Each structure stands twice: as structure tokens, then as C-alpha cells.
Length: 450
Image (cartoon, rainbow, N blue to C red; front, top):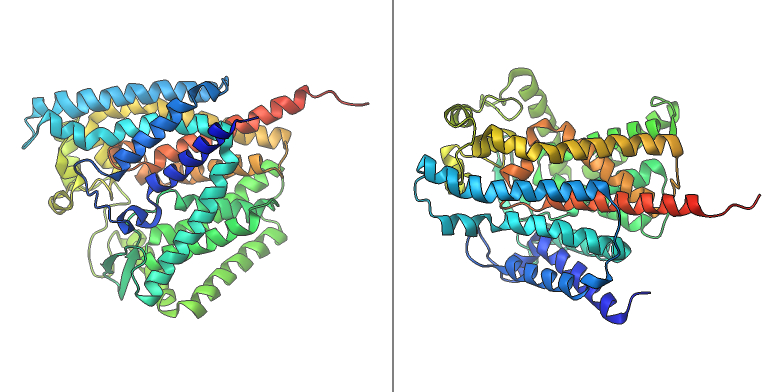
């Protein structure tokens, strides 16, 4: 039984985590203008999270989790490489313009925060994961509703980033930060396909619909089509685990019905964005066929032909460029340092072959865990209607899709000093499987009445 102080600290921790991930740009809505420099709100929030960890450290139970222990070691090895080699030795050796060790450390401090939060979140999750999902689900629904109201009414409740799309006159509407909101997509898919029935089922599916609507407003092809790919992967995963036919009439009808409902829902509520979606589909087909948009603009994201970045890789093949702030700025994007659009190539260019090799064990542990979990679920079919099983399958689906999108491989390196989402998803997956297997072990040890 947790004491009142521990329960209070858990509440503070998870609420702080929600703010830290900045879903919908809520920090900006409160006046935070973090940019990429100086001390900002997330630094303060990290201090709060560290305080929560220290205050209740003695309340954390020891869990023998080999996957977590290995990942923790490999993450700290990568962090040491990232700070010392990438952030100090290589840029000095390469004589990067405008470089200073202090400036590099300030810019890369998020990498330190990501690794320590991996430990904090794992410990708190094992103790109070239900509390986290309560906060996450309801806060996500609220933020997504406020985001949509902001777009529809024009009243700025949450900040909106607007961009132009070359194949439509509609403006693309983005959140400044999605935080952990994208996990609502695989959560909704798993609830629907695996027929889970628990307390938050309806709220999760509502969150899924709201998240997909936010993707529609962004007119981002990889988000919109990715949702349907996740649904298809969910069907495959369901068929494999339950050892059933993938192409049964029932499943085909369910997939068709799901698509029809989504399409007509968008058609009647957001007709202009429906038309933009059709154009986006046509543009995508054109890019796949000809390697360029209908306007003749070459799209290099599907291959390894981004000449500017490839040339950098050839020039610095082993240890990369080292820290160079141009990888992180809009001005750098204009020069060709596009880490966001070309994460795989950028990861090679920034840290070189050795940086990739240092991070590779993390991917190996992840892939082995995914294979083990999928086989385990297929063999034992243990408790496939519990919330714990739902969480495990959700994060399996998330990372299976993430690994299939090869252009995003090593995104955690390319955006190590800025993006927290990948690291957060990794620890949520590892902690979810820890809870699942602990439940299985306890169940196996219970005496049976014969």
C-alpha cells in the first residue's frame, strides 16, 4: 500500500511528464518560448521530475528486467559517445564554424535529460502506470479538442503552426509539438481490432479519431496514410497472435467498413481537406512512380540520394561532422542540413559509422524483444483481454510500424538533442512488457484447484 506522500509524488510526476512532452504546444500557450537555446521550462520541469524520483527512491521495487538493464547500459554508452565524441572531440578536430564546448553542451543537454528520464519513467511506471494513462488519455482528448476548436473558430486557444502545401491552396495546420499524442493511433487500432473491453475503451477510440483529425488538418501524407498502414499491421498482428486467417471475409469487411467510415466522416465534416487528401494520394503515387512531384520537384526522402547530406557522409564517414548547430535550425535547413526530413542520412552524417555502431545495440535489443513478445503472445495467448496485454500489444504495433518506415531509422540519433518522443515510447514499451510478464509469472505461481 503506497503512502499518501508517495501517491502525491506520483500525481506530480505524471502531470509534470504531460507538460514536459508539451502536447499541442501547451508550454507555448502558457508563454514559454523555448526555441533551441538557453534555460527554458523543460529544464525546470526536469528538476521537478528529478526531485520526485529522489523523494520516493526508496519506494521503488527491484524488478529483474534484463531488457531494461541492457538498454540502460547501452543508452549511457551512447550518451557518453554523444557528449564526448560528437559534442566535443570531433567538432574541434573538424574545426566546425562557431563551435564552443559550452554552447555544444547547452544545445545537447536534452540528450542527457532523455536518458535519465528513461530511468525515472520506468520506475514510476511500474508503480503507478494506471495513473499515468488516466492523465494521458483525458489530457490528450482535451488538448486535441482545443486544437480543433482553435482551427475551426480562429480563436487562438493553442498555438498553431501554418505552412503551405504545393498541391493545394489549403493551409497545413500543425501543433508545435505532438508530444505522446501519436500513440493514440496504435492504441485506437488495437482497441478496435483486438476487441479489448476495459474502462478507457471509449475514451481511447475518441482520442484516436481526434488524433486522426489533427493529422488531416496537417495534410501530411505519412501521417494520414500511416494510420491506415498501422490498421493493416494491426490486422496482421492479430491474425498471427490468434493463429487465424488474415484474409477472412469478416476481417476484409471490417477493414472496408473502417475505411468507409473514415472517408465519409472526413468528406461530410471537412470536404476541403477530403479533396486535399485525394490530391495528396495522387501526389504520393506520382512520387513513387517518377521520383518527383507533379510540379517536377524531386523527392529524395524515399531513397538515399540527398546529395548534400551524402557528400557530407563521404567527407566524414567514420565520426561524422560532430556537433554543428546548422543541423538544428531553420537556416541550416535552407543550406541542406535537414535532420528532420532525412533522419537516417542525417544520423550517419552527424555521428558517422562509429556513432551508428554505438547506437546499434539498442536497436538489436528492441528487435529481439519485439520478436520474443510476438512469439510469446502467439504461443500462450495469455490474458489477451487485460489492460496490461493491451498496452504491450499497442507498443509492439508502434515499434513494428516505426521499424518499417526505414527512412526514420536512427531518428533517435538525428534528433537526440531535441526530440523526446522516441525515447519515451521505448521506455513505455519496456516497462509495459515488464508489467505484463510480471503478471504472467505471478499467475503461473498461483496454486490451482483440481
